[in-house]
Image 1 (cartoon, rainbow, N blue to C red):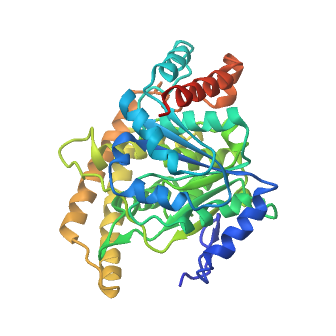
Image 2 (cartoon, rainbow, N blue to C red; image 1 turned 90 degrees about the vertical axis):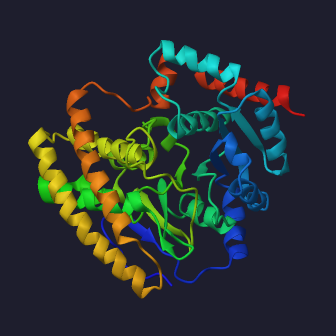
Length: 407
């Protein structure tokens, strides 16, 4: 059973009583009459052929309160898009698939590229951004949840607990971040969050002094969780990164746009496991290595917008402070694992910390060398101001794709 302790400056909604799912869903059905709900699923085609997504869709098909499901499909040829349409037919809810590699959406993307308004690189951020645009274009829902498609331990209670805070008309939350214990098969997982983000945030606080943004970020129990929910109006102004800094970027935007009492985090799962990325010790262009650089740059960029001045010497101090804090955390995690009968490889943990420390310096150098880098995708409000019919064009392209290629 979770405790009821409130840490930091963001409200934490716990899982104290393991409430009956049917009771929770009955409430959500009642909420849906006043506040229709939707779900965004950013997916690679390869995930349709894996173990996680087919099982996830079986659960989602039983969800009674969703008015719309928007699936973003990446890395799919025409035959694979047709397969995807057939794959998702089992969903009884209103749903559609965005064929991001199809000619219609690519043509729209090229128009936006010409205006300097399209995502600059492929990836989850781009996928999510177009899905958000489609939600705005169709105007069918007021509350939206988003979660990954590689969750091996998926249960529809995860979705119910995730969307409840922004669906309940009596709550005033605009955004909810999911969290959970990253423990599966007797192991402690979540290396990037445990060994990079948390100790780096603590190191930045030690080095730079008190900072409201750092306090805000350090309030989240699992800042890299890919599960969050929001009110529809959030989608208009949010600017998200197209790289691995997506989750950090979303939280940063919430800090910029909303007061703390409009945001929360919720315990959404007792166990959670998904596809694991390689550590990529010798390749900083892939796996957790690239992820760590993108995440670190996202934090540096946000702090710079607040007036923090960085130099090579600053980054060296941050790296040294991080390294000491992270090594101390390893001992903490090891002791926690032993007490709970779990395993944790101290040698592997220290290798990861050494790589993350090197990547803090790489991220710092990249930040200093590229002062004009703008990794954020423009907000939909800005895109609409430049191309007023963009949402209608997006809606039409998606619906024509779904109509033409349905079997």
